[in-house]
Amino acid sequence: MKIAVLGTGEVGRRIAGRLVELGHQVTLGSRTAQNAAAADWAAGTGGAHGTFARAAADSELVVNATGGLVSLAALTAAGEENLSGKVLVDVANPLDFSGGFPPKVVQVDGLSLAEQIQRAFPRARVVKTLNTMNNEVMVRPGLVPGHHTVFLGGDDAEAKAVVAALLREFGWTAEQILDLGDLSSARDTEQAVSLWVRLYGVLGRPDFNFAVVTP
Amino acid sequence: MKIAVLGTGEVGRRIAGRLVELGHQVTLGSRTAQNAAAADWAAGTGGAHGTFARAAADSELVVNATGGLVSLAALTAAGEENLSGKVLVDVANPLDFSGGFPPKVVQVDGLSLAEQIQRAFPRARVVKTLNTMNNEVMVRPGLVPGHHTVFLGGDDAEAKAVVAALLREFGWTAEQILDLGDLSSARDTEQAVSLWVRLYGVLGRPDFNFAVVTP
Image (tube, rainbow over all chains, first blue to last red; front, side, top):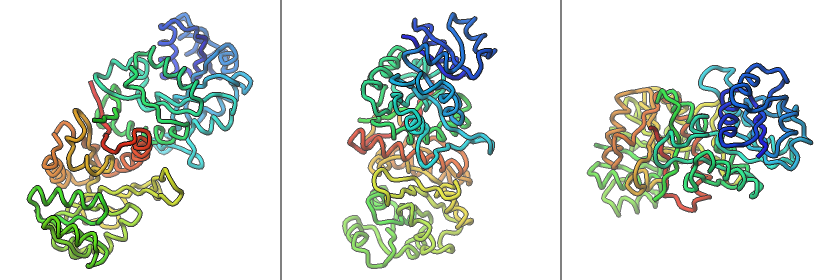
């Protein structure tokens, strides 16, 4: 699949690298065409890089891995026409670190970042997933042993099926993928990230995950 | 131990009943001395019942199982002098159902309910725990198989040890009890309850729990 990964931070590079490894044709998107991190990543992996708009235009599926507080700006730069009709996988978290650590989860008017993105780009098919864990666990769930969980939420069932298939490629089993329903569920997974951040401090390691355990 | 459980709803009655079963001397506290639910509970279990103040005065340890939006009022009725120096186990969640379902988690000025209680009653030794699961699982963790987690947070290490010992009596193992540190961690566990509520809707059953899974 032709996939754009927007955001050249650790999360974006990790997801993009794994997608290349899985055989996808990946463009890492950044604000400018001459982004050093993106160029390095492309040189090292054989992927492509370019502006947000170029990356999105060239893709069938778009991953938003930008910082949650700048995601709307990044997607605006990507261009509504380049997102229209496409599955938009939102893995970002709207965390405000300006008051120090721990960060605050910012949900304007009680809406999740994912819902704000869906409102701003109504023809994109937004799916929220993977935002409740570290980026290494996202793409290699086997790093955490046994049963643990990745959540999925979105208003477009077909788009969720496409994303679930990608998660399976990453290594997630059907039992580990938990569909929470519509995109308003992103409010809950984004809020749960404050507990993730706390646990990261307590455990002193990022390679853990939440599980939902049922009898 | 002489224990007051404040709140005659399902959570309060469940915890109080389990504590009686474990051999503790329990008083179920309510707003009025003639509460029908409390009287029924006492008649059925051999526990005692009385006003919030009476229950707290007679106890060494107090459990706040009132509704989160009325907890401060209930504890004020219990009386600062009756809480002073005592371990105060806060299992409540500040959920606002006035806008329908799902409820909103209310944290005034970004403070958890547990921190608000600690500020209002500085000589109580507040410990937040058990608020991230259904009341049956709280007192019988074996209802959920395998590894799952109960969180603990508070500013008084000795109080946390007392509460951890009570959790052990309920059936929680040392591996299942996860100390998140100080009481500000209650912000995170209270916020995570929105995900619990969502999962309850999706799974259609309350007997599940979160686990924190590490390698």
